[in-house]
Image (cartoon, rainbow, N blue to C red; front, top):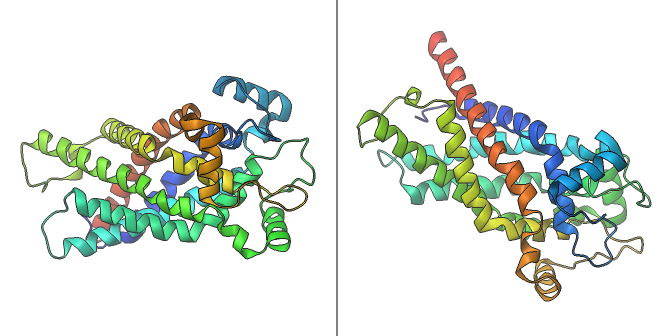
Length: 305
């Protein structure tokens, strides 16, 4: 299934990331604002629920507010998915050299390896995206855009600030690992059922877009439930410091202590509804686009050879 398809995986992954972020970005804005709003001295408006947040942002800030941080989200998602699928396929190919097929443990290892590498490459982009999404018209000294945010952060906080949230981001590698392991196992199980074979040596065309959508959504839900608190911790760490330059949270442990103290378990799941509404269909779109683009690229290469 792999055999030299790394660049096809990268292109298919990038296309999937592009489609996903374009489709779901307003919910990403809502999720981020819920995640950082701990009810204490926040400059983010308080929303009752996800529909109320969408309506309030649209009314107060317009389409620009709903798509705040869209450029870094687009850049980050496209690059991240492209790199993720590339590193993931490379890892799987390396493990396949000494065996006929991969089990859950090696799928998990491949996904974790890919996630760690992607996190190191893209954390600055996600930090800028988070800060742009948290801007409101009332905020003092707002960033004018992606490049202004990048320059301002480097000037006022130094290059280390670009890697705030890296630790919970690395823990979030387990999110992708869980998602991809669940996806691969569901995919393998379904293909075996369809063909009546148990060795997973079957053609990819035994599945269709509906299958990819279902597997993508189910695998994403499993990953969200297990790893969501790390997303909240990362978002809170990536907030812009106050005017005096003092960050709201010093490190991941500080976030955990303060959140547990003032909000309890519920605080670690703020924005969960928006996150599920965003990511379950988004994951379906991602895997539909990825699998179909990959199959088209493979078909084109076979015709040329």
